[in-house]
Image (cartoon, rainbow, N blue to C red; front, side):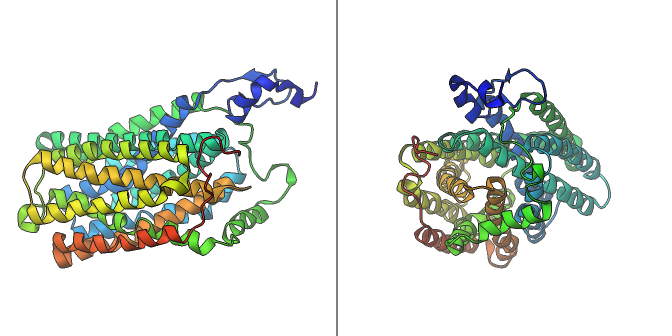
Length: 453
């Protein structure tokens, strides 16, 4: 019997969603039902944890370990580099082994990196050694992102990709709450009894165990989308030709300059803000900050704020799936950027009311989550085509570059002009975010449920 004859009409929706395990050799047809709810949430939870630790938790950890704002912003911003240059090796993830393989392998390596960092934190020269391990963790995480995002696009039809933007964003934010909120709060509780270095070592050990469990879970649970196979198999093209062909196809777009402007500048203000929020909350009033404890920062910024961001992301993904990206993009631009004003107020008023601080941070984070939905769907749109995984990796690489460069000098600006003037500058920095949406062309139906793939 021909292979295609084994796929009956009633199985086609499952095949499209990646819920059939492909047949090999003389195996009997095997239906492996994998609802997206079984793997999309856990996959993006696992994608979020290492990124948050590298980009955000590291800021709090180094601040508590006595590193200056200038060094924190400079060196942790450099850690964006693996996400910037991941398109250089993303074609090999496309062409060598399956994305399922890469997901599980990188989760094992991420867990090992976290264990190494736990050993380095309490020792002498911790800043040098932890930065080195952060680089290993960052490269592993960036490679995991390439595979996971490619797997997402192969495992779901386009309308479900748009509909699940909110779901994947929520669980990415759950990871942020678990790391930036839960882990930071726990570190704050452990610091008085264990000391700061040992408290953070315990946190890193716990996270390493979580990743060991995640790799085992995904080894058994991830589905087998029929399209998840090496792109260069069958002798169609050699690796070098496939590498350059996949990358050049992205840059041959007629609208490439507008696309790059959007990817680089839409979050120009947020790139600076995100590096300085935790130091602002932790620094005492004498230095222009709010003087919160580690645990309070974990609760307000890492928990309340992130829940608000999750709500914004979920609502953003849902409304785009109803009326499409083009209808919502300008509303999302305003909702994302205007709430940055709350930090201008906080830096001038320096309130001590925890409920007020938490409420204002929640407003800003909700706006960011809602506005980022437009950015996330835009990246899916520009990745459509033959090389989805590579082109999505290129888009996220430029996204990381747009976060890396502004973030690098934000700490230096703060130490030169103070928090008040820094936040005023950040408001001026929102201007590019209002310009770039006018430069790009968006299909009015893109992202809308019911659009034909």
